[in-house]
Image 1: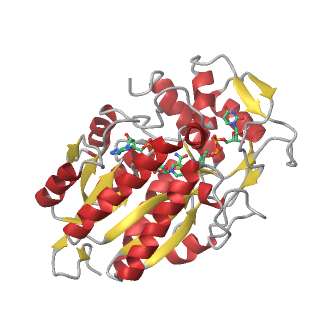
Image 2: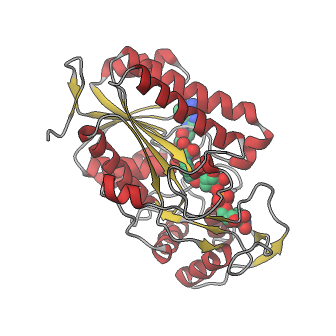
Amino acid sequence: MADNFCIPNGKTGQTVLVTGGAGYIGSHTCVKLLEAGKEIVVIDNLSNSRRNSIERIKEITGKDFTFYCDDLRDRAALRRIFRSHSISGVIHFAGWKAADESVALPLKYYDNNIVSAVSLLNAMAEHQVKNLVFSSSAAVYGIPHKVPIAEDFPLQPISPYGSTKLMIENILQDLHQADPYWNFVILRYFNPAGAHPSGLIGEDPIGIPSNLVPYITGVAVGRFEKLRVYGSDYPTKDGTCVRDYIHVDDLAEGHLAALAHLEKNRGFSVFNLGTGIGYSVMEVIGAFSKAAGKEIPYEITGRRAGDIPVCYANPYKAGIELLWKAQKGLDQMCRDSWNWQKKNPAGYG
Ligand code: NAD
Ligand code: WQD
């Protein structure tokens, strides 16, 4: 099998366009793509990331690539990018991702996530680029009727953020139905954590983190006084919520597997990317304390609105069809998150 995509109109190319490549998961995926010998081009408007991450990707890999600081909703900018590079496929990470914020500011999410996706797909259609890997989320499942969650479970998002992911999935399905030359792999990530082992790239959300692991690292580095544990009265092993934390490097590998899958199996497919193992908030605090060699001060507070008691993946389908399996466990995620945070107490700033 050739290492490049062959696009039906005869156009061939090897460059992968990575949207949101300066962000947390995007930057780790760019490293893996470059290490695998792929050519990449990155577009990111740096609304939730910093330019330093682009420099760090180049430092880790010793490879160069073109970075465009543009907004995906800028159709003229997209046109320029597609005209300037021989793009064969796209990995679409860019978008807003805070479920709780999306409840307060739904329009912000519908505008950025949906309009960006439609703008990107229009540019791809214009340039006959019809291969896309899309970053979806476990948020599309909402409250599962049972666990582990398989891809064919009901899709009932409970936040506008989750709705944007499901709407984009539906747009992709409609496109594929209208024109089978469109090829899509949808990846539904569970809870990403960890960082590149070099400590050069990692998670650096702008503002106060709403996710558990970056908040814990913020406490460990002295940025926050203590962690608030949202609820200890859930029907779980210790009363705190259970999630499927997955190392960001494993996720990044999942994108390489998705690209390989696109080359061999044209069509529309959906995969969960998770470990299949659920850990409680208290277990994460314990694992992180061990990794960092220090206690993490915390207090138990009331539940956070919209939290799901237990959520973890059935990753069987990705194992069989993508030949992908998460390799790194919770202890490694905590060690790598801590390594990143202690080397970069102020993140990229
Ligand atoms: P991130 O915020 O670190 O990265 C997203 C990047 O997209 C940022 O660099 C941001 O500047 C950029 N961006 C946003 N809107 C843009 C626009 N209109 N034009 C150009 N660039 C834009 O987030 P992440 O954690 O790396 O997540 C990547 C993707 O994975 C997102 O689509 C997110 O919804 C999805 N996802 C994330 C998680 C998670 O918990 N991190 C879980 C499931 C799914
Ligand atoms: C994990 C657990 C909290 C912070 C979110 C999005 C989801 C997906 C992943 C994008 C929960 C608890 C957290 C804190 C805490 N993102 N917690 N104190 O809620 O599973 O999912 O990120 O697609 O769509 O909703 O992740 O990291 O916010 O929370 O006790 O300060 O940690 O209650 O049980 P969540 P999270």
